[in-house]
Length: 235
Image 1 (tube, rainbow, N blue to C red):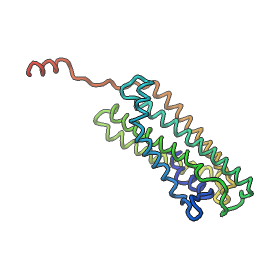
Image 2: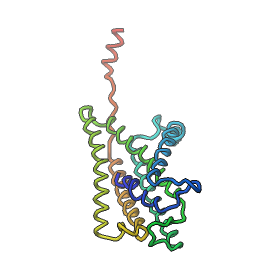
Image 3: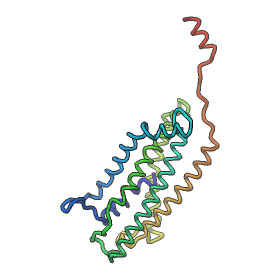
Image 4: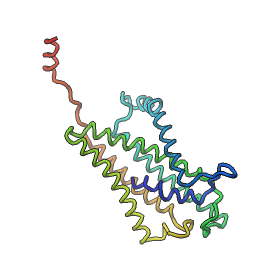
């Protein structure tokens, strides 16, 4: 969630400086760029059962396709690529600003299409479809019945904590470096910030893979054979 929180802040600042014109008289508002996340999520949901699950079943040999642990891992990996893409796009945006002498401009539009931001929006939408639902499925399948509500509450608490961590990280960087200046956005080093987030996500993914490899799934509860025999005899 620390990475996803940047979609509503720095990504909009990027969009504000880029060419957002669809026609000569209409341009996309920066705050409306999130529509690409929702469109990507709708497309992902519609294709998940028709394409992704059958492909996963073919390669894994499992009736359910990918397990919830694999789903969480894939979601974390996609999140890494989303932030990585954001860093590359920011580097390209700053390069375009430097070529056209707009690094010190606060109002001029940099001649680079805002649609360069679409991949990071789409990837963040994909990980939102994979990771949270994988977490919820894990809690309902593996947690004791008496703790399912508590586990779900912890999940939503972790999402809130991610937003606070994002704010804390931005505040620390504001005071310790010139990566995120309040003025002269083009002179900042937002791409460095994205690299830092990417590194933290890779460490998080590595820790998850280690924990998931040692995790033992809770066995499926089956009805005792004695009970089944008694039921059949009564019938």
